[in-house]
Length: 66
Image (tube, rainbow, N blue to C red; front, side, top):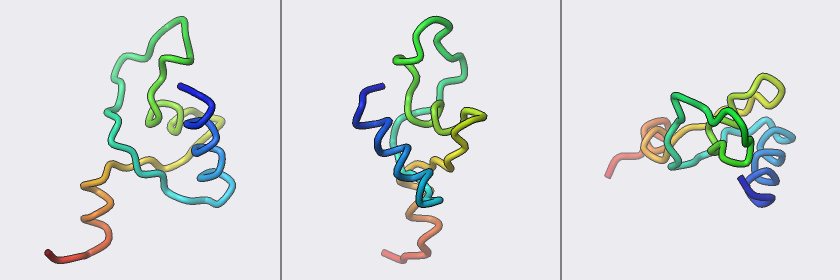
């Protein structure tokens, strides 16, 4: 997890926005290094609480028909 990802998550939290990420969820989080957490794992942390969805879910929610 780099600075850019943390910045994006912080902006989503500040604006009460849903974050769209194609990173997969991590069923088993890395024990030692928080820097190895993926965006959905950080979003789900108790102190962060940012809704994170994948692109397909974003399309579904939009109601767009192709």
